[in-house]
Amino acid sequence: FKASEGGFDLFGNTNSDIDLLAAGQSRSADGFTYYSPKIADLVTLNATYLMDDNYAQEVDGKKVDADNMYALSATVGDKGLKAQNYYVSAAYNDSIDNVKAYRGVAQVKLGQVILGGFYQNSEHVDSKYSNLEGDTYFVNAAYVMGNLKLKAMYGNDDSGLGKYVSRYVGSTDGASLETVSDVELQQFSVGADYRLSKNTLVYGHYTKYDGDMKLSGAKQDLSDDIFTVGMRFDF
Image 1 (cartoon, rainbow, N blue to C red):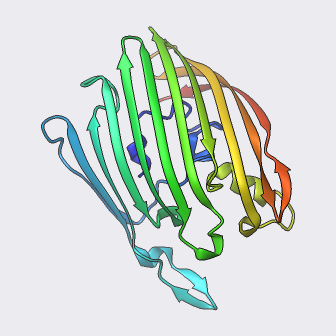
Image 2: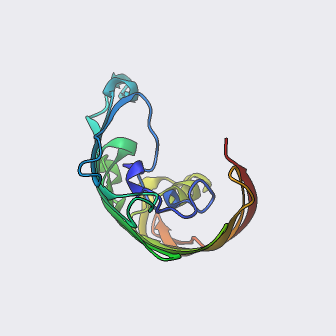
């Protein structure tokens, strides 16, 4: 399910990753994954199944195995936008990361410009958290000039299932995800990457989070600003 994003997340593995808004982004262990050969040099079909007993939980003092946890996806094109100048995927996730979700992702490269769109619907598998359900979407764009990539992304979430909400609730004394309602969260990011060499990348970005939600009926401000600079070594 996570892999179906392809190369869409322009700010992946940073504090502006799409997992702050979108659920189901974990790379879970103890499972089986199948990637089909590329059909007609274009389409792949993929599936993951996690071992239920490795995700058992305590319920009323007894160890109970998790429900069936699996994900399916189909992709068309090239996530690197090299063999083909487009990438499209559709994916479904059942119970991995405690959510049921489906998503669609699309990217296209037009000369030096890369445009992308992402939509996901998610709901928590536990009826105790039936309040956590909704839609997440992103649009982004990048402009590539040699070793320099300029990029921007906008996202919106009303499911409350991303890491941004769970971290906020976790830092609020006495709060619980059961009391979350009326989530409306936006993310806007702009930044640049510059590759100094094949193995070394320097980057910087600014991200603004804006929105609010309710905890036990009380309105909470979710606004925040992040400015980041860094260097990455690939090896």
